[in-house]
Amino acid sequence: MRLKEPVNAMISWPSANAPTRLKVIGVVKDALVNNPFARPEPMMFVYQPGWTGTVTYRLAPTVSASTAIAKLRAIYQPLQQRRLF
Image (cartoon, rainbow, N blue to C red; front, side, top):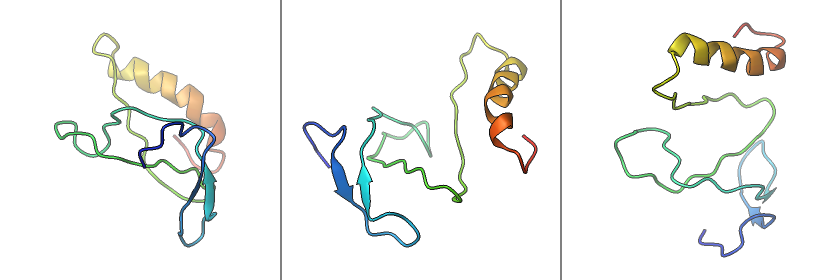
């Protein structure tokens, strides 16, 4: 998009089952989503209630996986009323 001041900008996004006008609320630099060895590509993250998706985390090498998962569970479990974490 190459916007000089992207935060609070309104953009058009023609998509089924989603708003066609979206407000930019933040910018992420070099988000690694699909391949951690590939160069980051431009990407847009959209919150749309009812859509499902995947959240990827990079864990600190100094934190055990079980400790990290316990911390993530504490954040997400209250939001997942119909499903178990």
